[in-house]
Length: 208
Length: 87
Image (cartoon, rainbow over all chains, first blue to last red):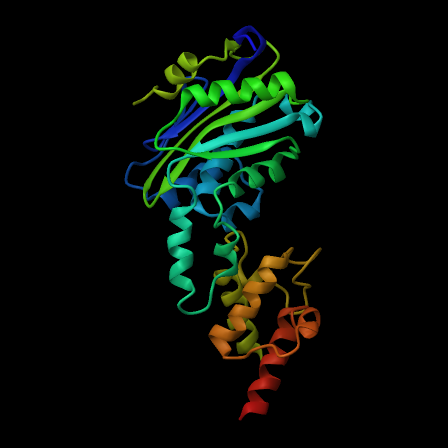
């Protein structure tokens, strides 16, 4: 598939308590906040009215918040649900929650934590929120793999019914976190940047 | 009974992380699931854990769950009955 057939139409970066949408700083939180407080403040700032957010683990909250910001000014919701997919990746899978869940099994295992002992649950939470029913894939790698995140979604757009795909990186381990999510589509709109590894890398590296 | 129901409301909010809910906003007879407080199946498991952790009560028959967890009042009634039976 040629890059002319797939485009980066949106980009949300969340790191260092800052939220960027399409390269523009949207919000900066108090740097003294812990991750939990930052995510809650982000929820209040960009969403609200979704009580299930509070039950999610930190990985799901971060990915959910990034998707919330990414999609706020798009019309991706008008696409058929089965044509919107997700391809995400990170370094620690669900280890942050796994560790806390393991601590509970010494007493009474927490059902609420057990729900989040798979990294792909973050994609499920995003799909539930937005009604997406397309293909989901979650990769684990040491670092953000721009090559994989350009080629795999581009292939999905070319050979499957997908018309749009949220792809990128959502990582949480203890207080360390980072989200870099992109909306890629087979339509030239929004940012309309041809989907290449170099373009993803350039967007990913903002504010580093 | 009133004290027990007040305690339960606070414990439910804490255990289920219902950050948008206050104890005062939960009615004694308000349904906990579906159109009431909107709890789901995972929340039901958390309520079972709550009974075990806070009141040392294990539900012997899972089929009793829907009736026990219908409202804060039915939970309190079940706790009182089982604590009385144990005494």
